[in-house]
Amino acid sequence: MRILVTGGAGFLGSHLCDRLLGEGHEVICLDNFFTGRKSNIAHLLGRPDFELVRHDIIDPFKCEVDQIYNLACPASPPHYQFNAIKTVKTSVMGAINSLGLAKRIRARILQASTSEVYGDPAVHPQTEGYWGNVNPIGIRSCYDEGKRVAETLFMDYHRQNGVDIRIVRIFNTYGPRMHPNDGRVVSNFIVQALKGDDITIYGDGTQTRSFCFVDDLLEAMTRTMNQSGTIGPVNIGNPDEFTMLELAELTIRLTGSRSKITHRPLPGDDPKQRRPDITVAKTYLDGWTPSIPLEEGLRRTIAYFKTQI
Ligand code: NAD
Ligand code: UDP
Image 1 (cartoon, rainbow, N blue to C red):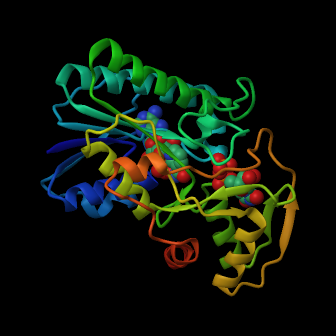
Image 2: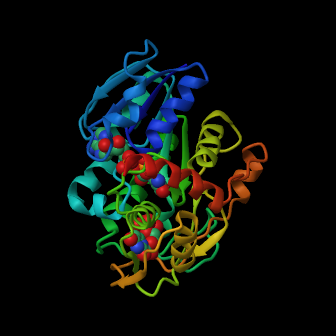
């Protein structure tokens, strides 16, 4: 197949390009390089089955492909809050442009949605049937509400125009090629530990997240795209849940660092807990279940960051 990956130069997108090429597909990678990096895809340039297009998805684009993975959107809170209005445009206009293309060329299209659609969840663990607890006017809203409207657009293009859609809700995913200054917790803690800087825990560190290694995520994402049992939404993540204090202590142990833990103010609307219910994924994705525990995934991610610092 020929496959379009928007946001293909980012953390997840570049691994997805590698994977699709490895399966024998042709890949068109579209990116505006806001948070993505050429170094993530440098090894692919020059391949006859790989094409790089610098383009901003808030503007329409045309190409002939069989499938579209729509990943273009900054994902870390500091990056998506840097230009909040642009984040909304990327999610909403990017979805409209990608869906318009899918409709015209009859391509199957997958949306990289997020656990943020559940906001600060009152239901735990989160099932796809839960509608969420999202502040519409807070500092995370540009991302959360943008992604919620994108899901609405996907469902409406499906109902109204018969577009062949898939929606995955991605829970915190980490691994090699995260940007060292990304601002997300796993990359922050590893970089701080390797440099011997203080580990910055926001708030008291009792808030929880469930961390999925990138390889497990991509396996589930590509399986969702290529099955016909459900259009989604499908939660994808690793249900093992950790407090940020536990993550900090584990990172210090695995890096052998002498860094000390320090506390900073908790940012507004920071979700207190997050853990995916992955029953739907297990049911429709041929028994998929995450296979890489946090300690193993962190070891691999630490090895990557050692080459970067
Ligand atoms: P990332 O920031 O590394 O990648 C995003 C990519 O999109 C970058 O290459 C960036 O340059 C590109 N981009 C941003 N705005 C664009 C625009 N207007 N036009 C074209 N390209 C644009 O983040 P990531 O972690 O790889 O996330 C990829 C997708 O997965 C995002 O849609 C994100 O919301 C979603 N997601 C990720 C996670 C996670 O934990 N990594 C969790 C939930 C959802
Ligand atoms: N966090 C932290 N220290 C950091 C960066 C983040 O304690 O240096 C916390 C953050 O407040 C949140 C959790 O770690 O509670 C996960 O943050 P991240 O930005 O990785 O993802 P998200 O909040 O979007 O799940």
